Image (cartoon, rainbow, N blue to C red; front, top):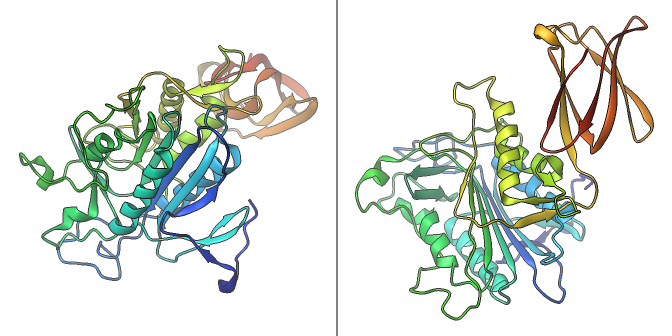
Length: 391
């Protein structure tokens, strides 16, 4: 999407459902709810910083949430349940419109009330057909302890006695959503999994849920609910981000969905929940192992196998090229062709490994310096990734 700054009079505010994109049609649909909470007014360095504030502002949730929304609108493909709607709530220091194919939309802040109302509408959209698919994505501050997870909305205030009223109890939320007709519900949580002191105590309140749990929630349905959860990191671990950029988790998700998690076992390139987690784990490790003693590793659970996304074209996946004994690849130029078009890439004297993201196919790589061939290799680019030695 082209980025332009609309005039105030051109802005259209979203409704209470927070929908920024909708596509009506017959049959089942996928409905997505994305929440990015980066600006917390009551946290450290916030405009209303409160006594006892324990957490700081975040700069990655807004670009992460926007990148995810754009991906679903522009690229998501699942023929059994095509995209029906995308709802988006974002908290940022300087509110910025979200640009859609139909115009610029002014987003609502994800305080607990706005979030709760948007969830009710999201529930209703999914409740029309058992073959609908619901996808929930959260990026922001959170706490985790064993099976409990608290996701903090923008109005969370550590100084309030009822502070957990501004947090989502993820466990109860997922259990409550089981009474929605949509049998397939996916939850992606990009938040820390470290416990807060309050949550360690027996019977501690972990937050609220807009959808309450009932007994035997699938009593009137033919299908059981399938609710996979994907966490950015493991238990008692932080979620890592990059300042003013999309998070590690979001980067891994987007790269995986664009090809690294694709499989063609059925004759069509598609991403399933297990291949997605494998690809995201690889990407997260590559992005974090150089800088952290414990590289970030996504976690998943509570899922039966299913197809998540069908690629409209061949997948993009990385090829890693190296030389024996840690010998640098450069100085020199790497020559190869993509779709019949010759390409070259310069390699520096200290570059130990060359990473290329390429469409599916077979490639001839040749390393040249001062007009002479130094090394070469033939290698296929295929998900999840391939590594080849230049000889």
